[in-house]
Length: 280
Image (cartoon, rainbow, N blue to C red):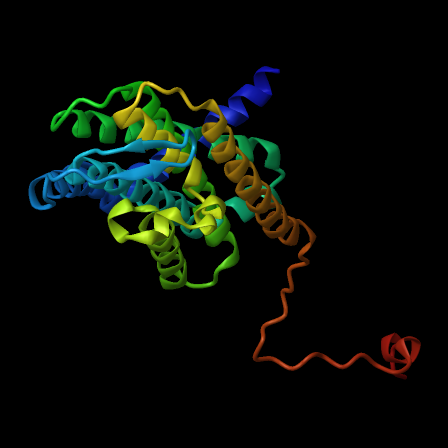
């Protein structure tokens, strides 16, 4: 039991060190989140915007800059968390394969990535909620933080999937950015009729958007929408687990070749017995 605990703690430490080395992600967390939320509050007009919250059917009329802050916080949290998990998966892929090849249990590697994702998502969601509360007071800050946390977890797993399947770093970054822009942009009430379409129910952060909007402007607790978001996380986690299993399985079944690629294969004699006999 203690051996498994040591293996798990070691794997978690590897992932956390890799996250700490991603200085761009640290800068984005410290600078991008407060700047984006503050700009949304200062630039977007404060006139009230009426839209219907699908989760309850209730008509809400929040200030335009406040609902934009919520959508901006969701966009920033999901993008940063997805980027962090994509980077640690893409750059640490060879290291994971070497650990698997050396006999390191893959279950400990998976649990370590899940633990590091949970810690990163919790810290980023709490930080974004605190920054948002500096401008105005949401009705349910704990529900808002929980909604941001669930969205961050979902996109963190999507980052693992992209990091495992895509070959180049620019492909993964483009996939994350475009997914988040389409996802959050179509649900933004300021975007027009997109938020009233049935299509938004199938977007990755639908549960997060509904729960965060309710947390900001109502007293309704929406565990069902958080459960919907958890289903998205579970589905993305299953895909990430399959991709990780395939990559580490390839490492375990690979047979190294020691022949130099620029040298031709050595021909074997047709009659080994004659070739090894001593000439008279």
